Structures are given as C-alpha cells and as structure tokens.
Length: 326
Image (cartoon, rainbow, N blue to C red; front, side, top):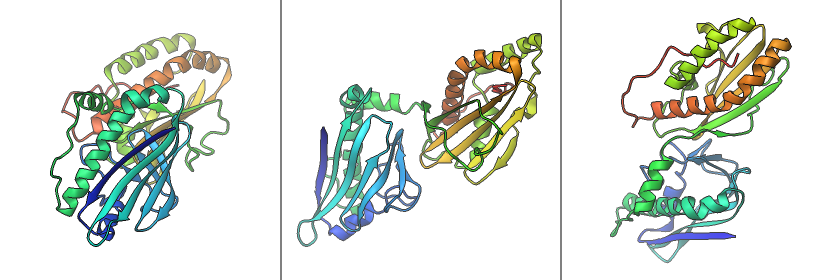
C-alpha cells in the first residue's frame, strides 16, 4: 500500500481555501499549477464528476463541500485507490490544505511509481500548494524547486503518447456498421490550450500524417492494385456525422468497410476504429494490415497532439497521405 501526503498550513480561513479547491478541473481552476498537464473534469466538482490529468483517469467518489473531495482511480491503470484534497480549520484565519493519496500499484506501475510517477506526483503537489499561496496572496516564502530528475521526467512526460483504451460506446459508433469484425481504440492526453473541436483533431490526425506513414501509404497504394483491391481516394476520411464532441469518418470498399471516431473527452482525445471485412480479399488484406494498424494509429494520434499543442514549434508537415485501413 502506498500512502503519500502533502500539506501546508495557510494563513487564510478554511472557507476561502475551499473556494480554490472547489474550482478544480473547471475553466476557472485557480488551484491546479500552470505548466503541468491540466486537470480536467466533465462537470463542476461534485459527486460523479470524472476526468483526469495527463494519462491518469479518476472520478469523484466522495464530496463534502467545505471540507473534502475524494477521487477514485479508474480501473486498468495499475493504480487501485484514492486521492483526496482536505481542508481543515486551525482556528480563526488559519487552515491546513492537505492532499492524501492511498493506493495499491499493479503491473508495470509497481516499477513506474517509485522510479517516475512518484517524483512527478510530489513535484506537482508542491507546485499546487505554492499556487494556493499565490492565489491567497500569502506567499510562497520558499517556492518549490524541481529536482534534475523531475526536469528530465517532465520533458519525457510532455511528449504525447497514445495508449490502448477500451472502445467507447458512443452514439455515433453504436451501429456505425451492421457488423464489426475488428475494433480498437487509442487515447492521447490533450495538451493545455489545444482545440476542443473534434474536427480539428480529425483533420490533424488524418489530413497531416507523419512522413513515414505517408511513405507507407504510398507503398500500400502501389501494391493493393496487384491483388485487385481498390485504391483509396481523397474522400476516405470525409466526415460522415458529428456531434459537439465527436466526429465519425470512414468509407465502404469492396474488401472492407471502416469507420473512425475521433472523440474529445475531458483531458484526452480517443481515436477508435471499427472494421467490417468483406470476402477473402478483405480477410487477406486485414490479416496483414492489422499488425501495422496499431503502430500507425498511435503515431498519427501522438503527432496530432504535438501539432495542436500551443507550444509546438512551426514546422512543415506531410499532407499528401491518408491513413486508410482499407
């Protein structure tokens, strides 16, 4: 069991400090420190609010206004437990702001927690307490300093990485194809300040692919005609349907049909693909492509996150390729 506590006594009434805590995860967040992957929730802080920061996902499991908010980690992350912000009065005009984390680690997180995740966790919490003092106008007297290890880890962590996630059950994906023979989904943390329009993400993913992916697609285009598979045209990733937080793209072909969903969630973007295979040529084609598909999709999604980050440097981008699984 891991137990980790950060706290600071503040020269301010508990009610005023709770106002900072209560802004967490919202557009007017006054407590989460700048310069870190933002904490984003799908609704105002309260029971059932869910979201996360970076690649970590959690939901509010306990909420006592003025005193405590507790989050429970989502399953499948190698972290089983809770973290909570607590405000305790210490008399007139003084209180303690505390963050308590209690969890069990599993899988790769047993190694990652002590080597990388804990140092980053400790650093962001100390920055958060500094942020509280600045918001209150009381300090900090000695701002937290980041160790060389944390600086190195932050540079590595800031490079977006796409990870496999369960395929979301969304209104656009549900029934998008009459039959689904293959499906997968990958998510990437959304950089602070990146567009919230899913169409902007879809264009960044599919219309501006990395150079090596474009080369692979050109090779595919040259080879598929040999086995009688039609070549994809520029309409392969036209938007078919959309909502405020999701777009559905795709096309039908003689060997397979596919749909791609780009879903904007609090703090991350999820790219899902569902495929219906048609006939022997489709089975042969997908038998080869399915091994490359995860690598290509992860690369495209991570590249889109880097490109849409407000801190991304201007650079030329390949626009000729289309990442067509069919």
